[in-house]
Each structure stands twice: as structure tokens, then as C-alpha cells.
Length: 247
Image 1 (cartoon, one colour):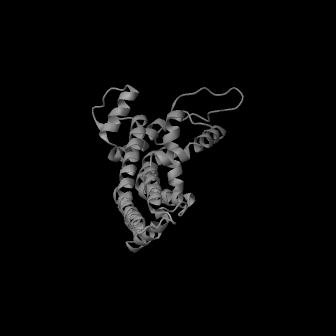
Image 2 (image 1 turned 90 degrees about the horizontal axis):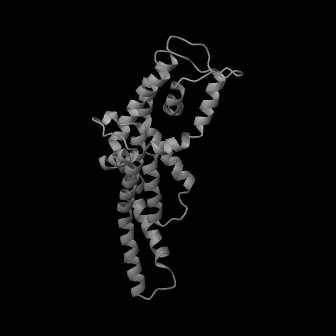
Image 3 (image 1 turned 180 degrees about the horizontal axis):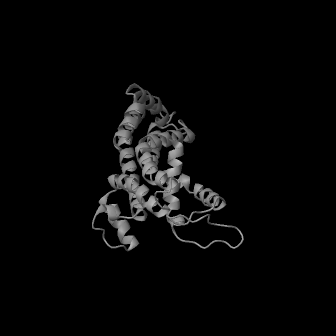
């Protein structure tokens, strides 16, 4: 699964670069032998390009996957519970990463089968493989991007209005998807805050009414919030509801 994800992301990143015709270096051979489908890059040049694109892999995973929404929601949840560092950042990031892999698995496998495999077998060129492999990703991004955000990105890019959603480029869909995911994450986080905020208000009112000012109300309400969260099986409810938003 992870191998397929890496290959699919590298295909999308390298498609435009590898598809453009280039000149061979006079000392180090950049291209290998030519075939009926076009020029192929030599092995050293492929390694250089792939290692360069690997530096962009974390940003791509965070930007074009559910990782963004999940991390925002989990951050708000931890703040609402009042636990400063439990769960730790590493645990939350790891949970969000594997949940993103779980959600993106069908999309990644579709990209791999439609884009990478035909290119690897010589049936398609890199440009054709990029076009075919980007189609499943475009469908996923369109599904969770708001029309308002897409329109804003189209206006910023000064592009003509597309006739159909399929005509949109990834350079427009990706920022629109990021904006939509951030709004969705903040909306879910605000809803999660409400029940814990009520507990804080009740505890603060009670402690002030009886004159207990030795301890801050946050310290007194924290055990009650954690107990409530555990009794209602909060992790299952939050994660399950979050995954359903991507179904």
C-alpha cells in the first residue's frame, strides 16, 4: 500500500517534468535509448529526479489527502479535552497518517494501475501516464472541494472558466481542496468544543459560587471532561464520524 502510494505520488509529480523533451548532456548521458513511444531517461537521471521529488512527498501527502482535515480535528479535540500533550503530537500525526492511507487506498491503487503500470510496461508515454493517473485524483479532489473555493482559485490563476469539472487543472484543484479541508476541519473542531465548553462553564460557575478559588476551574473540569469522553467511547465516535465524511 505504501509502495503504491509513493509510486503514484511520484508519477503525478514527475509526469510534467519527464514528458517535456530535453537535450542530452554532452558528458553524462541523460537519456537512454529511444523507442517508438519516445525518449526514456537514463537510470542515473531517473534516480536524481526521484530523489529530488521525494523531498516534496510529505507536503504532497498532507496537501492532497484527508491528512489535513484529520490533524486539524484531532488538534481541536485535544485542546477541548484540556490535555496539553496527551496524546502526543507523534501519536496524533501517526494516527492521521494511517487513517489517510486507509481512505486514499482505492484512489492510490487506481492511480497506480491507470498511470504507472502502463508507463512501466511501455504502453504509454510519461505525459500520457500523467494524464491518466491524475484522473482518479481529480475526481477525489472535486468531490471534497467547494465550488466557491474552486472559483476563487480559477480567478487567481486568471484561467478561463472550465466547461466541465474534468477540465480543471491540478494547480487549481489542489489549493481549492486545501481551503475546503481547512474549513471543514475547523467546523468539526468547533462542534467538538461545545460539549466540553459547557462542562467548563458549569464547573466554573459551581466553584465560584461556593468560593473555591484555590484551584483554577480548568484543573477541576479536566477529569470530568476526560471521564465523559471515555464513557461515550469518544475516540470511536470521533474517528468513525470523521471517516464517514470521506465515504
